Length: 150
Length: 92
Image (cartoon, rainbow over all chains, first blue to last red; front, side, top):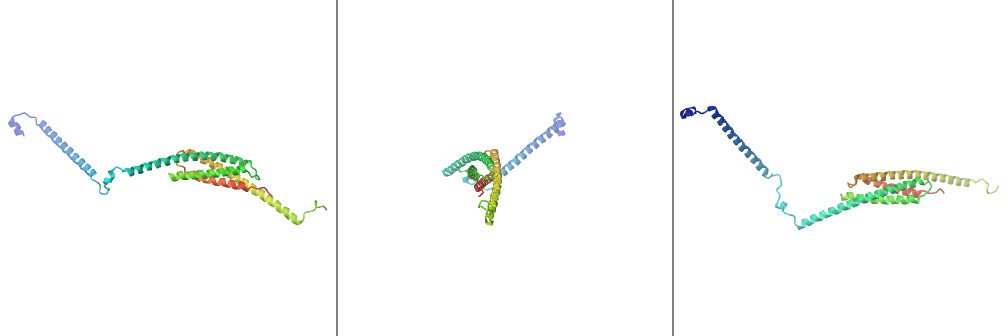
């Protein structure tokens, strides 16, 4: 190189030329690095796209749109669900109402029992207790229906 | 000696005694029944108050199992109050 420089008689700066060479080397190295990264990521992408042998391959029916029967069944199911939901809401409202009525009856019963002496047979107490029993039974049945519905 | 101030014979004495014991027994049974009625009606009111509070607390959510147990208990207690009140009777 020095000979060539001497032969050509050019006054070239040797340190500047070596720096250019070094820069070129790094430039080519970075290109190689970029190529390597691209190849690596492509291989990863390919691997992720290849199907897992353990995973079942979805058949053509998976992407097929549902037929009329399936749509009808789905609609019926949705309607049934919405109906049972509204029935549950109504039942819960009734349970709350019955419970408030139970509270009133129990308060009245307690007051009436307090009023009676040990030798009095109070028909009012008997009637109120009977009513409470019936109401509690109906609340119990409604609760059962709500729980089994869910 | 007239029939009025004649001393009762042993049969009559036994009858009087039996009646007296029976009256005492009825009174004791009625008193015990009244005590139980008071207890049952108090417990009934407590349970109904608790049930009401529980149902208000849950709102639109699921009905809790404890509420179902309370309703069953309320039903039983109301039946017991009814039966005990029916059993109350005057002494002979």
